[in-house]
Amino acid sequence: MRLERRRIVGEAIFADEIGIEYGIHGEFRLRSAYQPIFAPLGRSLHAVAVEGLIEPHRAGRAGSARAFFESVAPSDRLFVETMCRVLHLRNFHNIGVDGLDLFFNYNPMVNDHPGRALAEIRLMSRHLDELGLAPGMLVCEITEQAADDALLARLVREMRRDGIRIAIDDFGTGHSTEERVSLLQPDIVKIDGGWFAEFCRHAAAERFFRPLVSSLHDRGARVLVEGIEQPVHLRVALDGGVDLLQGYLLARPALAGTIFNEEPLVIDALLGRENNVVPLFG
Image (cartoon, rainbow, N blue to C red; front, side):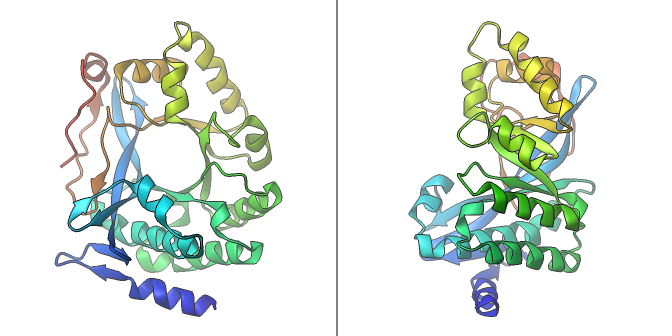
């Protein structure tokens, strides 16, 4: 069963004329895109990682990733998630920049049996060397899902044993709570962008955000804020002492093979912007 699924995933992946790999699922061509993640250093932001994201294309047009994943039949979800993860890992070298980490999403609900979930992680870890990747470069984002906590704890232990770091995604919403932080002891906590945008509307946002960041630091986690789309979001995040930032104000996702701009971003220039639209890298 496992060997058959691996063969099918491999047969659904192709390479274009310049060697960028893509997946085929039904009418969709699935392409890897990478969104930079930045760390503040002085008065500038430096790219230190990327998050692998899928850009689905149909009839030559890019569509909504959310709509695509919602359309995937439950029986195909494990296949599609496995294929997306393989694409991100295989295409990562096309960024052409040394020293970047790779964040990838992992939905614990796509596996219907703990053994299958653990097998997926072990298989991925065994093949990293073939792709020129070290486990320490990878950060697995556990997406916000009502998964069994005992299963999550086993998965996290397995990944940590292999050297992969753990991030809890969508903190502030649903099941991504302080209780789950205590259970999984993640290396990184990723603050949900929608929750953070709403939080930033309050006049005392800076005053209340810093204690939250400090409490997560006290638990041994670095803090990443996603969804940075407006200067106020950046200001509140920086004033709060976060470690990592991600969002359209800083950089949009760019397809694999796009030239990656390594130039630091000037914080003062970002805080002075009146609009939310920034050019793509490349």
